[in-house]
Image (cartoon, rainbow, N blue to C red; front, side):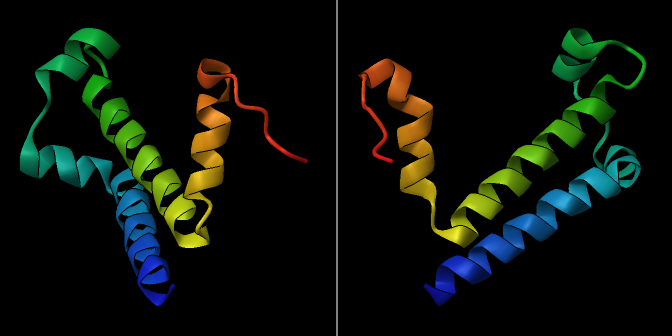
Length: 86
């Protein structure tokens, strides 16, 4: 339980840091060609790094709250025809 909270808090901090410090990440690690190609040449890498940050932040919240099983059931329910009990 405590490990989940610590891991979730670290993931939240990393995700928020990636969203806030996107320019620093680009200056130190460079642009990503795939993001530039798929998301546009002006700000494609910025948007890509921010999307990665938001995904990490969201996963961190899920890990921290311990609701991973419920989230996966909800996410996969259309595929596996699993009804979520109320």
